Length: 309
Ligand code: UDP
Ligand code: MG
Image 1: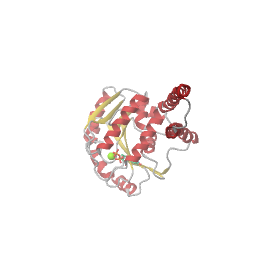
Image 2: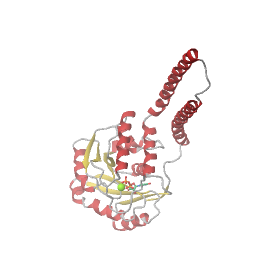
Image 3: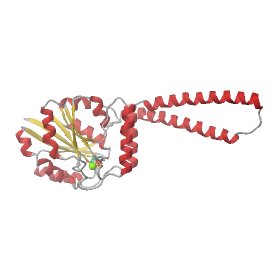
Image 4: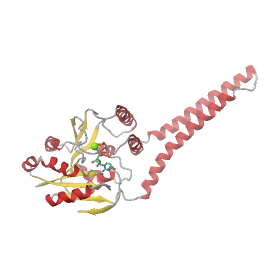
């Protein structure tokens, strides 16, 4: 019998824990027909509500439920990493607790693994129910990312993925602290089949991502998988130098022809502001990479476990 591990990161998902399990187990006849044993691994990411209690209640009824509970909120990326580390399955699938990743897709996804794919990823074809401004920036991010990074990132890709043990081990071999899972999947490669589905709205509760969090997350993604901004800083510097040379020649010629009447201080002020702005911006870019390097060098654990069974 093969084992399928279902990783479920949970942060304040008390209403969804049981509901998710029930929905997942509607596939029971499929699991049995494929000779799949299923373990459901809830990763409690420091929830402040009754998520852990709910998982414990569920465990009393279902032997195949497991829990890893963090000492505090470490973020979804940390939860995913913990899930991969603790998963024992020959196949591993990662799903959100809010049922935005429909368990009914599993049979189809599994059939692709049988056809020889190493990993089956999902992508939603629309962004129904999402604020338009968020969709706009999300699209912009993916377009920019695919231009400046060699790693393939797919717009609308969810973290809902089914993969073989080999892929899981490859992901685990990337032990970096700043984890951007969407990029990591692209980076490890392997034969990936994309399955598309329409966006499903959250079953209960609210999304944990606001615009600002998503913005910071996108910077995480850019710095983790591209060094183009650093090159951009150098190019910007070269361009500014060229402009300065042009201006010097222009001023010399102008002075020789028309003399040097005092004036032009407003333009001078503008130039000073512009140049110092560009400098600070470029310094900021370097700072982003430096701070990531700093965090990486500290080698802190990605998460801390409080309870595990
Ligand atoms: N999540 C988590 N830690 C966090 C934030 C979210 O483990 O700090 C989990 C959350 O419980 C859910 C999944 O990650 O199972 C996706 O979160 P959410 O539904 O809020 O994101 P969205 O679907 O809106 O992108
Ligand atoms: Mg969700």
